[in-house]
Image 1 (cartoon, one colour):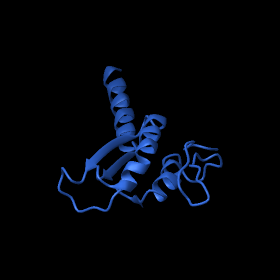
Image 2 (image 1 turned 90 degrees about the vertical axis):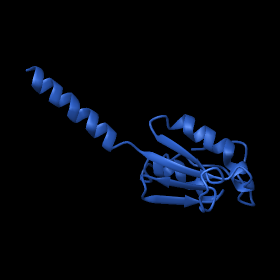
Image 3 (image 1 turned 180 degrees about the vertical axis):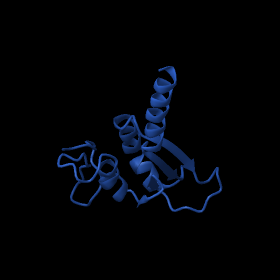
Length: 118
């Protein structure tokens, strides 16, 4: 019985590890677009607490990656200060969700103070 319970717990833990959502976020502290969406990134991290976030400062890590860039589960790549706020929350909670959290923008497609709208 003990072995069965241990095996069941192991399967549950491994399933959770495999199904975890991971986001690699690439930024440059001097990039104006990165600075523009920095408050959004803070809010989205607080909103999606089950997501494993890895921030990459491309200057410190000496990477040649366009910034800002968000890569979800090494499959979905979002680039730029417009596409990341627009699509990242939807991708994280699956695009098919009708009440997808998205961002609000003004007439020039700039994010407004209220990032999340339903």
